[in-house]
Amino acid sequence: MPASNIDIAIVFEKIADLLDVQGANFFRIRAYRKAARQLRSMTEDIAQCIKNGQDLSKLPAIGHNLAAKIIEIIESGNCSTLTTLQKNSPQGLIDLLHIPGLGPKRVHTLYHELGIHTPEQVLRAAKDGRISSLPGLGEKTQANIIRAVASQMKKKPRVQLSIAAQYAEPLASYLRLIEGVEQVVIAGSYRRCKETVGDIDILVVSPKGYKAIEAFTHYEQVRDVLSKGTTRSSVILYSGLQVDMRVVPNASYGAALYYFTGSKAHNIALRSLAKRRGLKINEYGVYRDNKLIAGPTEESILTVMELPWIPPELRENSGEIEAAQQHTLPNLVTCGDLKGDLHAHTTATDGHNSLLEMALAARDSGLDYLAITEHSKRLTVVHGLDEKRLAAQIEEIDKLNAQLKGITLLKGIEVDILESGELDLPDNILGKLDLVIGAVHSNFHLSRVKQTERILRAMDSQYFTLLAHPTGRLLENREAYDVDMSRIIRHAKQRGCYLELNAQPMRLDLSALHCQMAKTEGVLVSINSDAHRVTDFRNLQYGVGQARRGWLQKNDVLNTRSLAELRSLIDNMHNAG
Image: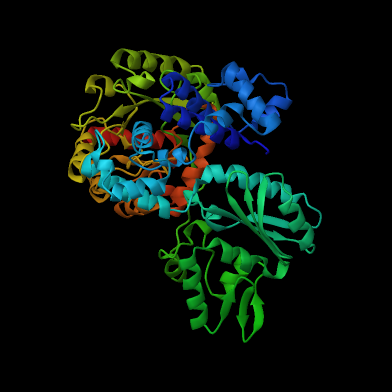
């Protein structure tokens, strides 16, 4: 099996999960998880690093032992450590770990006390009342487990957009090299920049469709061929991701691309509009009286429908067709509009690069300014800054700014919002910063009222500038905490502070809906990378994609302002507070 960075990361995550259930050494488990995160974040192909003679043990979080395992996986397609663990563990235990509310300790208990190792067995035991009889569980936990397992079993597996990109983009590049292939484009929810992707849709224009199909089904990452025809084929990659490919003629390329990009609801709405105009529209083109009148480009489809260009990110049937008819579609924000990034970490806390390295990487990414926002002291696990260490970093940033050219570092902090709503650091140090990001990192299970009041109180602090990752969600891993976002957004408007759209692919928090709500209230959103390493600035593209899904324009985004404009806005807010 070919091994990409993500494939190796998945192997390490499985090892960590199985060790966790066994109750193995905490530090050993953490080493595998940290290595997996490192591999997922790398833009360089790890196999190519080996070919280039690079010493993998020098990479962050790898070391000699894990470097040897990476080489083993790449050279043999297997990992002996995982194989041994899987032989000694019932199949299905890893699936249990992915059910909300079932951590390693509970999975360990369920297996050793009840012999349970599949989701179906968990559900049966919960319905029979056997789980509530176990120590430390009880009826409330049992009811929660029933809901979680039932929901998990219904859910179709999805992957984060950035992970899908690591499979889809190389495949598209491979297909572009095939003889006779004229165009290759990735469509579907991927092109709409959805937070997660269930499968990949690829369109190919080629007069020699059979050659494209042959190349597609023989791609090195293909595990199973589900179907294979003359113009379409479906495969499963080794990662488990399904890819569907269509070969279309030039005359239908635009129609097919539009059809396979829009959501089902958007396409139904467009067909209804076509029908009212006496037209028929499908993936082959637009027809009037069975005569093809449009199809080679997406623009041709929209022109005959008397509609302006509708960006792919908006094709969800959430008002975009009506806005197009009224010529009120927004001119959406682009990556090139961003002037700075207001959320980044260094080795002072849990980052992987120095202050200087992060500054230079931000400059090389085309940014004019970067806010350094370490964690505050409450997060001891990541060596959060107390007043003394923050004061020292302020001085360090001032000295570095005197030397830097082409980039300005802003002094900030990602300060914890305590359960009481108080901030983790006092005003006398917060007042020395350019901006303060407030963040919830604990007590996620407070009631809706308490969680909301907690955040509102924090926003009332004099130096509060920006609410980080406002709902706390981790895609496909942790649900958003229960909070009244309408009240949060209205309070931000009243207070004059801002909301973050965290561009980390696992977060993409704000949601597109909350972006629209902020836009309606006139609350500016800051698209931030939350960078922990120099390569993380590339994640801004995912934040911009999410902002576009939320109908945000350049003026709706805080960090499209120049540094002088940004300073003026923040100073005015603090003075008003």
